[in-house]
Length: 394
Image (cartoon, rainbow, N blue to C red):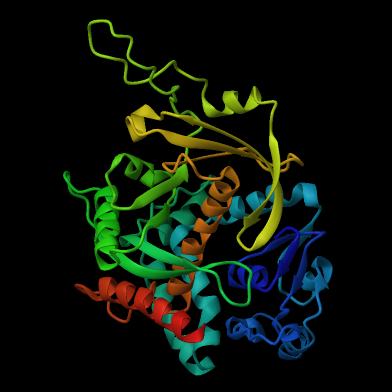
């Protein structure tokens, strides 16, 4: 954690299995100061002492990283310039251990929070039984005897690949937007069926439900090829690859014999294009409910390999302080305001919050039945509940 972790930022720190904080980090649950609620803070009294949790919730006052370490909210406090390295070192220490044992240890830690102590012991025995029976249980002692590094068995995890469309809603209290699920498809690997096919189907279905509406679709780079599809009344905004082969617009016909050119001259790749820019525009944009100062530059061009002959507006976003790398976005709406494009794509993160919340708070990642269609039904129900609860709340 780096910087200010208030409200939603505190939720992220609380949700993580482990937390490394920079010395400059600050933590607070400020909802009490503005008359809002923090039901997501229910697990806090399991993470730290109840009286400390009570003080944090009732006062809304921030605490610094050192105090957060003292009360057990974070694991380590390091200098700001050491934060990423410290987190990486901690992750590497964990990754060097037996995967099955790590997985079982995480489940064991949470048992007491979920069950009475007497039941937790029995549940822990069931969790650790597969570890005792695994090849790792033999490999660990053998490696110790032979004075070598253990070679742990590979653990494979299965899951569902779900394509989801959410409607972005600005909450009445301001801040980060919400993503309310309105359509979803389960993806299964098929040679003639891609995630982009499912996404296009859902957008077309949504357009059919709302024939009088137009849509501004923000999607991550994996769905950039949607820009070349004839989506009804929909403009696509996505991320452009750093190695994208981009071209100038096709020149006008020359009147000479032969097929006219479909694209102009090859342009430098986006990072090289950004390096040559001198006429940046300084603007204030909305980044997930907060105002940020950014430098923007835009140009209409062709990303021929992905978007075909569809002209797109490329937007380069630069942090004037140099703390963040340049971002490269594009939109099929060539008349769009570049500042809107940058804000629009930043708001796409609301769908990631939706995925986290449906998995952790609505049972999407822990269905009661893992047989047959149980996980699929739990996923669909948790997405539906997310939209229903937010609509009821706001």
